[in-house]
Picture 1 (cartoon, helix red, strand yellow):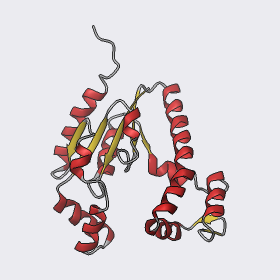
Picture 2 (cartoon, helix red, strand yellow):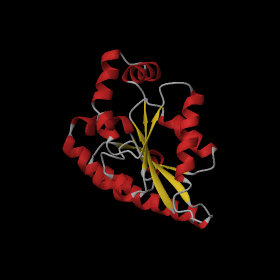
Picture 3 (tube, rainbow, N blue to C red):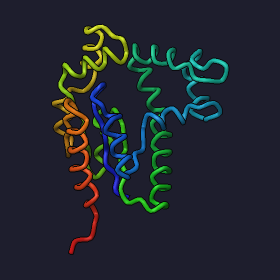
Length: 201
């Protein structure tokens, strides 16, 4: 199984690219979906979180707003949460990839917002970075989440700068234009991705 990373800053339209990749027949493992799955009621990770962060599990379910407020303000708490979750997310991702391989898939993407920050790209065959001009990011974020311009700018600035991410990316998609323009870029990259590992004549 040849696995490639897929990432992008907030409001760059990574979900749009993910949908296009899936529509073209290449599976995508979503790290955010796995993160939600490992903290579902009854999962060991939820018990560990309840023990480490009293008050964030209410009626047997994770109160994401409480947990988010806590770890956003406290880097040590965020590190502790990551240490609880990341090994479980990684194990679940490996199980999903093994299942895909067993079903005959030879290529897949791993979609993770913090792909470069957590150095996950280092174990992959390559990575795709989705970008958009800063003003487009701000406008999308303000419209999507009802934020002020200052709040939107703060959220963007809290992430790894796009220029730093570009240094790690194998391919870059500019998602600041039309969907058709984005689709053409996705198709061109997938043509290269699907040649990876193919026998040469």
